Image 1 (cartoon, helix red, strand yellow):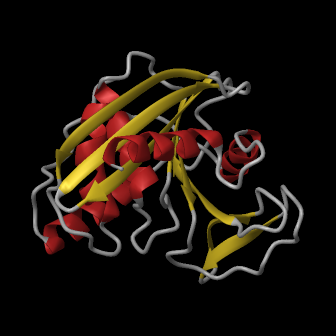
Image 2 (spheres, helix red, strand yellow):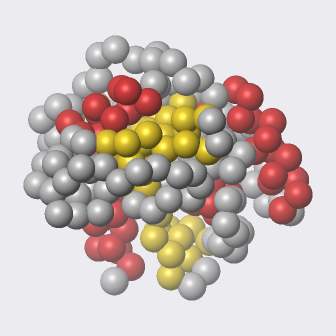
Length: 220
């Protein structure tokens, strides 16, 4: 896998916002994938000024681990709400470039379109690698939605004004729902289905759960 060099990463707040506003116009909200055989989950853990980035490729729908990569790097940007991708993607790029299997889909623990400028981590990552991507976040960044019923697979739409920016999805009974949004080259309907198909007995889908466990193994 090879990342596209769309912009620089060590920039100020205003420049980062300008980049997000520009890139948002390139997001494809339609399904550009029909046969999913592999899904790659990514996650980044932080300890002081060090980033621990993991990428885990799983078969789909059997969810068997096919490949893992891990990279430790220096943090280039502090945490700023709305600019998570500028903090995490510089660490994720080398981790994903080490992967020999080009996945059919990327799954990130973060937002996609459900972002103030419609350019969350999953959308940014999808553009950087020109791959379909899904945002699967544990908390809401923007939007309003009713609470889904307490059955696995139940969901409600997440609105920002009159615009649908994602879905609030129950992946396990008696647990908090997840916030699913389009990253790139995928529809919301397909994104919801894939996330559900990736959930076994846990709240989190296996690709991002496995990536998270990989980061914990390294920096504990």
